[in-house]
Image 1 (cartoon, rainbow, N blue to C red):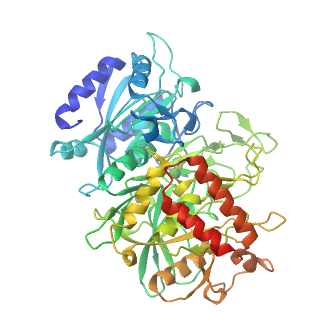
Image 2: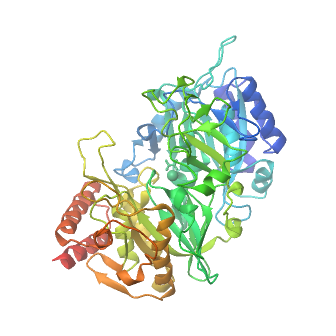
Image 3: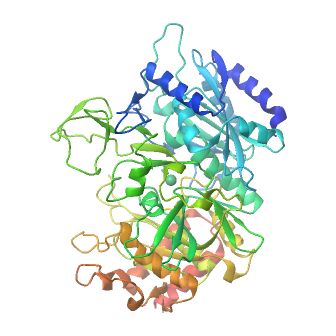
Amino acid sequence: MYTFHTLTAWIEEMRLLCTPDKVVWCTGSEEEYQAFLQLMVSEGKAKPLNPIKRPGSYAFFSDPSDVARTENRTFIACQNPDDAGPTNNWVDPDEIKKTLKASFRGSMKGRTMYVIPFMMGPLGAPVSKIGIQLTDSLYVVVNMRLMTRMGSHVLKALEKGGEFVPCLHSVGYPLEKGQKDLPWPCAPIEKKYIVHFPEERMIWSYGSGYGGNALLGKKCLALRIASVLARDEGWMAEHMLILKLTDPNGKYRYILGAFPSACGKTNLAMLVPTLPGWTVETLGDDIAWIRLGKDGRLYAINPEYGFFGVAKGTSFQSNPNAMHAISKNTLFTNVALTDDLDVWWEGIDGPIPAHLTDWQGQSWTPQSSTPAAHPNSRFTVSTKQCPVLAKEWENPEGVPISAILVGGRRPTTIPLVHESFSWAHGVFMGSTVGSEITAASISNNIGQVRRDPFAMLPFIGYHVGDYLKHWLDMGKKTSPEKLPRIFYVNWFRKDDQGHFLWPGFGENSRVLKWIFERCEGNVQAKKTPIGYMPYLKDLDTDGLVLEKGALKTLTDVHSDVWTQEAKDIRQYYEKLGPKIPHELYEELDGLSSRLK
Ligand code: OXD
Ligand code: MN
């Protein structure tokens, strides 16, 4: 058990293993944050941006080999391989500890070990969890300061009782005496290991300094380890945005949304409705922890304290609120820089500058053959800078959820919106979401669907079949009318020429309005073989210009296409193996027979 009383012993053990030159306990103060940034500037690891255009902001550039989460180097270390299931890389905990101890031995030589006490979830919230990350990367420290509630107050909370999740991290680049450091030290890909010990509730990450591989509060703790805690303790840790939708009369409802990476979760969380009088406010853009409230409803909190958003494609057109949020005090990674030291990326507003410095420090012009910003370039910014942050976002009890949206990128088959008949049917829908493989990704499987159950495929810390069973079990803990309704949405339907049929972004508020009215019980819906769908008169299309016939295609259900979809789902379930709950097969059989 890792508690306040064992904390110093654990740190001492890790210090003796990693042999840093010194150990620094982070207080989390503003002065400390500024001092760390200055230190990184002096070491050539951070670049201050134009103080007029982007005050308080810095740019960081990673090694070209260390630019994203590395799922093939991410492991679940549990005793029985079947507990990790077919969607995870399993390793034996004792074996991997031996391997990794050899890697960590002396890995912080010539460096400082920083101790980061952090909390996921608001202080005092019943589901909040404490983690202690040890790292030799200052980049990680400053990012964790924005992304989590970090500092001495967390140690005080730990002193009062409870456990913490030990998170050991090293970039894996020790410095011999006199050896010059690199701007972004890391280990080669085959030496990187992001290892989760769900039985011990511990994380060891070696060799990468980037995003979810290194900021261990996020995907590692708040999703992979938390999903295991949630299963054992009867709650849910999900890859979901949380938003508050308010109608023109001031009535509001809270909605969750599970979408795979690169489907616009951050944009939806901060959406500016085109429908007059409607507003969306943000509570979270990536992770939701959900538990049953005393009143039998499901309540969600956002365990994070910042946004780690994809920069590429973010603009005043796609997400004005994010653009305002990142106007100051923001850390940028792998973006391009303008000649006057502002940031730039593909898809940002305005004309393409005649000259830039690309993310690899090379001179760039519009004639260059490579992108100026890395496609996975990121901004890190405090949640508090979001101009449409809902005031209740830190409510320790969370907010009661009325609807859960699931979806992916599906150019064909899936209509704009359909609603599940029941919780179990909604779990079935969530288990089948995913994105169609397009020519944009190098693959022989164009047109096939890469399924990503509840957008959690890379983040479930245990067997996917048990995970889906946990979803079904959660629905049995309360009465059906108290559960959120589940909606399957698809903003990405295309016509035969490959043009999007639905404009998306702020226009998605039209779909949100129908969902809101369904939750209010104000609109009837059409029963179809796949679920409830809107009558066209109930979908507010006032002032919306669509391609001729678009609305019909967007709301069509073709039984031959769906029969193929059902077949494909069956194959997917079979591939996942015998742990897929029989209730989901019953839902699949139900769908197939309704299609006949
Ligand atoms: C993320 C992701 O970074 O899902 O949020 O990959
Ligand atoms: Mn995510």
